[in-house]
Length: 519
Image: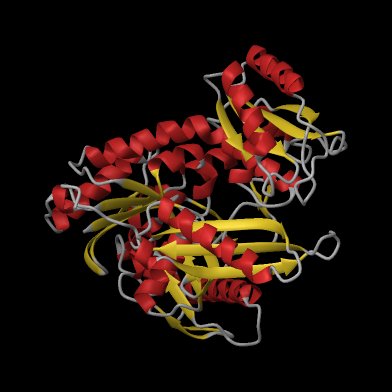
């Protein structure tokens, strides 16, 4: 058995699975400290279907902790950005395009030193270790606790980043160090931004992961704990401590993976209607389509792995206004739904109240929304259907209509037919698809690099890249016999010399599980 948990802005969902069979599923309110909500969800599973904690082989959690901390600009560590690029790359300093409130929140300090590579591995300049030591000493005096190191074209050659990290560790042994070649892709500023964000979250990551582990072991479960990543795969807790940015989009990703399993459709559009937002994404071969452009997170441009998701402010907790025209969202009562919605005795008209008044849902006390007119309810539901249909249309990349799968507790707001897409599929257990997606997630490995492909060597380079992706998946905990390449891109870069080609390979395999006795 395995347990999947997904922590959303409004609800914390949990499922107990035996293989792909759902034995128990619960939905509880997300709590301000989040971990007590997880404890409550685990207790709910035990009450619904008693199980021996020793029979649980793994626990998978998708969490919004880290993205929320960045958006709210709180609990971020004092961070320094060290860029190895001089004499190039000085015109746009680190954090140049950040919102000022986030620069202030991380007490952002920037240092530029000599170093960096050309795309083919040649040195722009030798790494100046004296400059790195001087920067490290200044960081120490300024109270910096986390350092982001970025070198030009480090995804091609990471030697300078690793040497600089060794110097920082020697000078500032207590500081956490994040290296850009381990986080982002080719593209200096976006990769640097992602690395600084990761560095700023390192302290919080250690605290949160310890809290999550404690909430699981407190329930008597000794099985290993995994966190969901942006691409629909898993990472262990040590990886999560080092790379918290890898969890940013785990919520919608889990919902999409869960939708694929529950519906049996591996290529479709998925609409996940939660309490606060509706996330629209596209599945290809059972995995979320990845964003091909830079992704802006909390006003910061980044280029690490993120699914191509369009979020709109429509959910079960969305406020409904009807002064003339009817509008739904984008603001929401969020996790306060059970105290603020009319059906729960509150004073705020929400989308959930509309669903109850229209007979789409049985939640709370229907008598409290009996005064809502049929005309208002239908107008609000038409508004929701129109906005969601528009979002699905914007996510299509071909003329072929995409089947639509609706999941999430708020999907009762959607009609049975969506304009331009036809029938809306609502599979069993749709309300907890996100937790199911977490529970069935696999282990992945990826390579994304620029190669100089010599004439006649293309097949050898491609095979080597694919093998490296497979090896990374196995090293991360995938069962070797189950690993396969699920995504591959090969893009020649005409403006660089030497037959430069960007190759991206992604391998995925089943998690290698052991029982409490290590079998």
